[in-house]
Image (cartoon, rainbow, N blue to C red; front, side):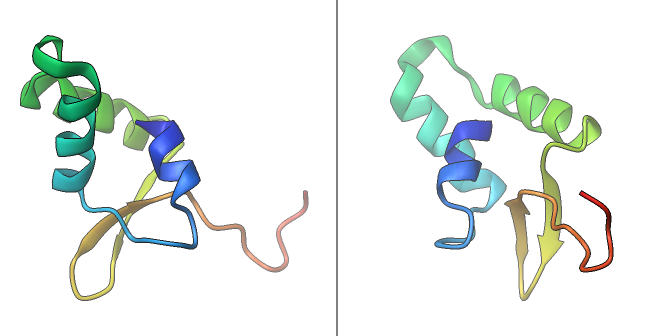
Amino acid sequence: MYKLVAESAGKKNLKAGDLTKAMIVKHGATCTKDDCKQALRLLIDAERCVYSYFGGSYVELPHKEGAAPE
């Protein structure tokens, strides 16, 4: 799921439902909506992904601030 978000960074905004559908297509019957919700929650809690709100909620990689040290 993280790989899909990273690949689409800056190109397309992905909603949580888009990620869930993509994971179910990729992994078939072994992946459920609940599994996807839990995986997304882990990514958000670990701060590897963040929700952004621009006319809708999207899952993105965290942005770096301009003055933030590298």
